[in-house]
Length: 125
Image (cartoon, rainbow, N blue to C red; front, top):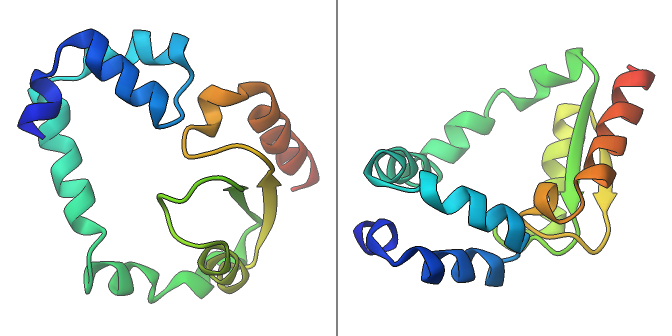
């Protein structure tokens, strides 16, 4: 994390773009990356380990009491498999909306399509 926040801004922007973030967005995000962000990211990533993840998912069925939407960018390999996403959505009673061709940074790749999926869900809820 220290290496990431210390990287030259152009290198960091290029890395984010290579990971799928829209280049124009990466240029705007990079100035906000610093020690404070690193201090936030580490606990977040560490909380994604077991047994913390199992504990977080233990009550997922309770989410079915309200309408839910699970956005599933088809090219996002950073957050689990399609099967894992669909199983969690089913347990939560959530509708799955596939964002075909989009990856982890879907909201920067095609913000209009993401917004349309959200609006469609809100209108149906």
